Length: 270
Length: 293
Image 1 (cartoon, rainbow over the protein chains, first blue to last red):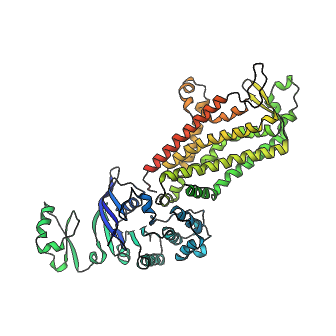
Image 2 (cartoon, rainbow over the protein chains, first blue to last red; image 1 turned 90 degrees about the vertical axis):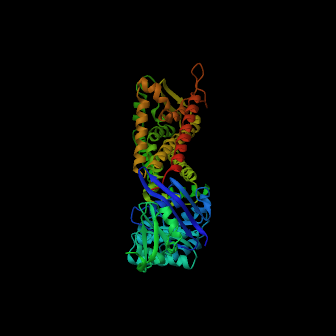
Image 3 (cartoon, chains in turn green, brown; image 1 turned 120 degrees about the vertical axis):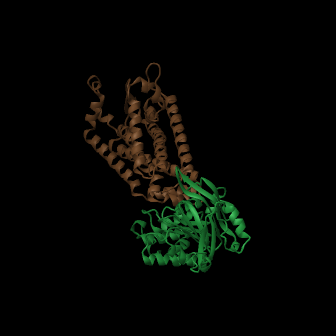
């Protein structure tokens, strides 16, 4: 699989606070990639760096195989996003909002295309209504339409279910799955709810206090028959090398600064 | 860039606040015209002071369309900066507080283009506002009060400008005022890039104008010598220069002339320098800014 996003040693420091600390991860083509962490874990800061809203203190971001900050415009033409809650121009209609963001994405928007996108999120009847009259769920759906209006290859959704009622959450989940399955989009979705990520993502990263805890396939990470065992030694590098020469080597987690082994529960030493 | 400018203009045009300024100005001009229609002669007698006792003056002719326009110019150009700040102070900070700035900045357009498009869109708004003032005060005043020579008060006394020599001065004065207002817009824009709510930049812009105007007006040698030459407010009222007519050695006014043209050009130059510096600073700050709103 080709890497769509390749993040290496990404850090962001706000004065004394390390919002993101040496974060590395890879999102592959077709992934629904879950970005899981508590509030304040660094998810939104990381996502804002992926969208060039925040400049990293250190590290590299490569999207579609190109450096993000060198090829910013070219890359962002292929990216659609909802960043936290989808705030739009309240004094404009849904149609006008969509038209503005389509133009900003480099499109010459046609009415049929815009109406098609509004229909996709169930807002075609409210095309001419001002956004200030919309419920949170409707704004969220319009935000999705804005993110998808230019048919991007990569969709980044920061906490897309925030503020939605249960039906809205279910609709959002179905839409994400539909975009992935039927349209082959690569999707990064952040959430603080494991249950949410579990239902939609095939791969995920868990972030805590700006640092990566673990990254991998959701099915493997949540496999109830496996446990993740973390070892603490006075020389992790040497221990890792020694373990590689034993049967334990196959259980070692790659690309980790920490020494972790994924093993069957019954094999975990007492 | 053109695409961005169109979008910014569209947004400005769809905001109710935009039309508020046009409505306020129309109402204000109407009140001035009504007041001068009813009490214009009294006002002119007051303006002429003791001169009226020594000269035979037809006050009815002095209260004409051009005099009313000149009066409107004097009154409004002091207050239009507030209306300009209302729109320009909101262009970036308003989007930050609304939450749309992050969507805008995550699109494939450069941040420099975003700021320039916002500034040019503000320029179109300011131009429209001044054109609105110029046209409604001129058309209505000429229709109601008629056309005649314009009397302008100078520190050296009164000066008469022939009716046929007024109109171009009037439009040039508005042209100058446009540049002056664009300095106000540039200050608001700069403050707007530093803030995440609209009120702060609007209030701060008005505050800066008031403080700078007060310092410019104070007859304190320290301020006059070392500070006043560097304040933008020193140059903002340069439009009045278009109504100071040149004269020959024996005191005859020269039609079509401007008495202090170099001073006007110097003011225009200073204001343009302010615009370039302030807009460049806005671009620099916005390009470096982490968008956290």
